[in-house]
Length: 246
Image (cartoon, rainbow, N blue to C red; front, side, top):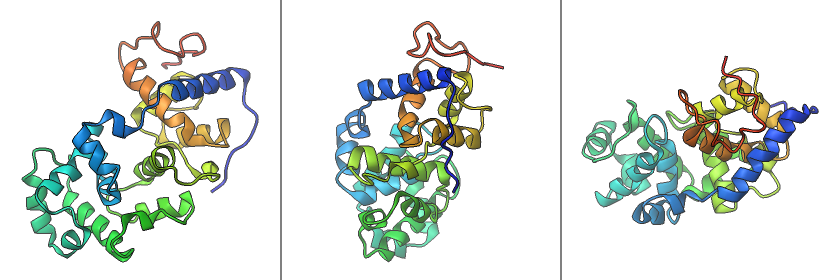
């Protein structure tokens, strides 16, 4: 993958620095923002973390991370049990949960995640320990439904919350979800509201650690830079943002 390192306009540099400052001041690990019983599980059990990350698409993020907890309550949060189960059985398991994946194919996702862990000796952490962020992302993307965005998010969380990949931050990209793409476009960082433009912009504007811009842009997109009726006066970027909504 070609990494972009060209110089950036002063306006973009100011927005980037403001995003980084916002992240440094307000970022909290997910463990501190999740219900305690969920956070305690997914931040002490690497397989629970993997399952939560794999399902963090198409539904509120806290609900996604609750799924491994609910599977654990059924006595099934075991990669060997899940990998050896049929997809039909896993579909019934997921349908029985009070919180379930939004998209179809959840049973296949769960089975392939478990099989990947079994392939690594039953230790989910072995998927990302001792390898580069790029290699870890590639392994995660082998699971059905886990695309580049989810893989990048998982790798970023492993860095920020688990202390992984120190010194390899250049390889960790933003997860270009709707909030990040919207903030990047409106703030003049990206040429369009698209995944490719967001990833390229983060690589170009903050090459030492592109994903450092991920959480602050996501947070601002959720709290202030909403799709409609954005709260520009209250936004931390308001004095720097060109507010490009067209």
